Image 1 (tube, rainbow, N blue to C red):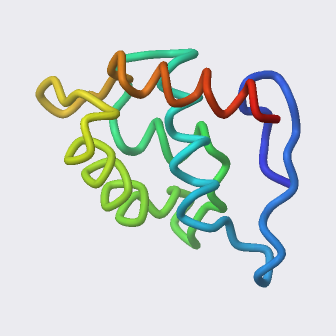
Image 2: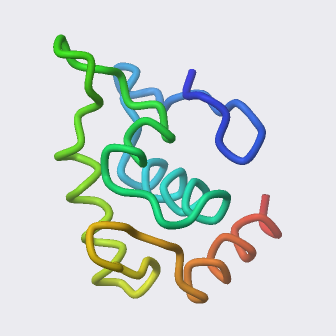
Length: 99
């Protein structure tokens, strides 16, 4: 299970215990909504990616997804820190209404 994101536990996707990009994107948006101005390593830890043998979360996957969210206008980049945009907040609200 992934750690608490937005105060609840959510199971990982059914594909060999890995989160899908859609699940990861939503977890990243929630993490940024709850605590803005995080860097990639902090986001990787916040969404519960398993740590590597060196004790660090695999930030390359998170970096790739965060940059995609920036390109889509859902996340804003401020130096090496990120925060959710107004469009990202609206998307989470729409998804919450559908759930």
